[in-house]
Amino acid sequence: MTAAPAEPVIRIAGITKSFGSHQVLKGIDLAVGKGEVVAIIGPSGSGKTTLLRCINFLEEYDGGSVRIDGVEVGYKDTADGRRRRSDRELARIRVEAAMVFQQFNLFPHLTAAQNVMLGLVKSRGKSKGEARQIAEKWLTRVGLAAKFDALPSQLSGGQQQRVGITRAVAMEPKVLLLDEITSALDPELVGEVLAVVQELAAEGRTMILVTHEMAFAREVADRVVFTDQGRIVIDAPPATVFDDQPNERLRSFLSRFA
Ligand code: ADP
Image 1 (tube, rainbow, N blue to C red):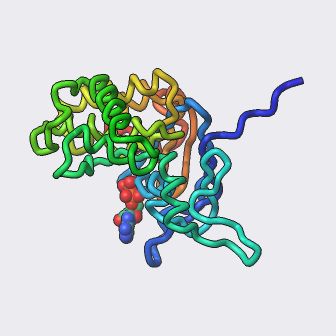
Image 2 (cartoon, rainbow, N blue to C red):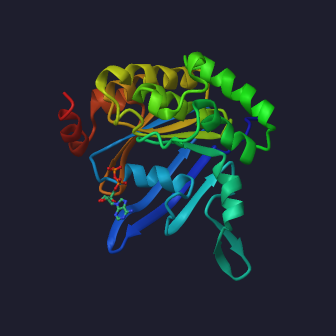
């Protein structure tokens, strides 16, 4: 007897999203299993960031569903139809899909350690002492042992983004969402941030990352999803996407990185 396949950590089914009359997501289906790393690539404006933000409802999808470990993120079915979740319910669910942003989004008046501690205390119910210990452990791991008490303005872009990653991963979310996390960095700082992501992937953390770093996507991802004009055109292993390039739109897109 074979075991039933495990429910994916993330199951996206038929989501749609419009801004005014512009439909940005035209029915997206995507399932991500535990420990999988999925890279989303595609032309600017194809809906990559919007898709990522729909996963934790930072962007409210119009139709379809997003489930994290079987729990619908943004809406709840009730006797009289679909109801948007309360902010309190959303906050609880969002913790499981922590996001790292292109512009870091650290609190400028808080130190590196305090930025990491905040969510641990507020959303995970840790005491300040415990949260400090977790923050120090993680910041040490990403090479920032000397920077616990530095403010973001005293850190390089690469260091700030390592704090950003630490803040997300310290929450032990079910999935990490990484939105073009190296796009705002000087080229010489990209490597130190990608090295951290690589380590997290190697230890089996579930991740969805939007990236323009094709070599990195090829190396780190189990699957690569190519989006164009609000649809997923290809969802395949990196070798298929980058070597076989089985689609004209994909070929045209990848030729820009050659
Ligand atoms: P990508 O990440 O692939 O570059 P985005 O998801 O950022 O694409 O954007 C997809 C489309 O949605 C773009 O045309 C963009 O201008 C539009 N868009 C994104 N966010 C908003 C918003 N808050 N209001 C209006 N239009 C938006």
